[in-house]
Length: 342
Image 1 (tube, rainbow, N blue to C red):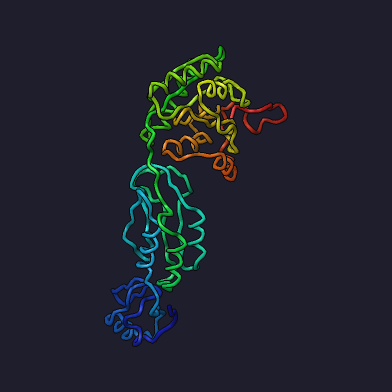
Image 2: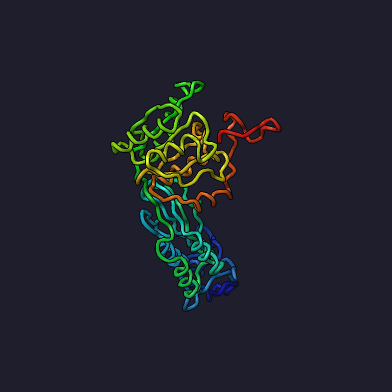
């Protein structure tokens, strides 16, 4: 691609580098200079314009943007028609945005003329929400650079995982100090969290704060097939793998995959399973409607995205969230704080 000043008489057919205006006529940048516009400019005494000439191997900005966006598009995404070197991708269903991050980084490293910007990985998105944009910076790119970018991105580097788990079962444990009104509020907050995903609380039970009662509650609920995801809210925070909730999951025949998370609020989350049903031991902050680590794990599991220990460990960067003032032990508790119900 050649870029620079060109005599008006030689500019017909070239692309405008900047918007041209002559009398009442306007020619937007990036469009071919017409004979009429060249004549108008000459009549006004303009001798040269800044224009762009494409070389034989160059690919125009719109064509290039569309080709790359098409290569990156995976399941449940649609493309808009390209314009001014930009092609946007939109979610076709609500769900979780999955990104092959190393491949997007590789695409952006091919040539400074080629860029891809996305929402954060694993972000919950609504149907119709824009999740990524491909932008070609100049008016064209070399064909070999575009080919390399498409290869680096591969096929389907961006996908939407729709929400699939719709029935959530809740087991709440009780201690004398915990009021039923607190449990009621917790269930309302959870229902509000689920609303945007299409899931709902399909079953709920309240049991004593013992491993045996937790096991019985989970077993009765999941054994009857009433839920495809379970959440246990403890009257007291989980302090150890041998505590009531993890012990109850194991007593029911389930497993504990991971306890703790480098997300604050949300440190004291437990992840396990009973058969093929994921079980979350909710941290205390999950009783609050404010975003916390519980949201991140819940949303992935609702979209049937497996969550491994490695996935949880990776959440530490960016895992310091807004403080939830109402939690019993805020992180900025001074020397008197002995821990928190995160």
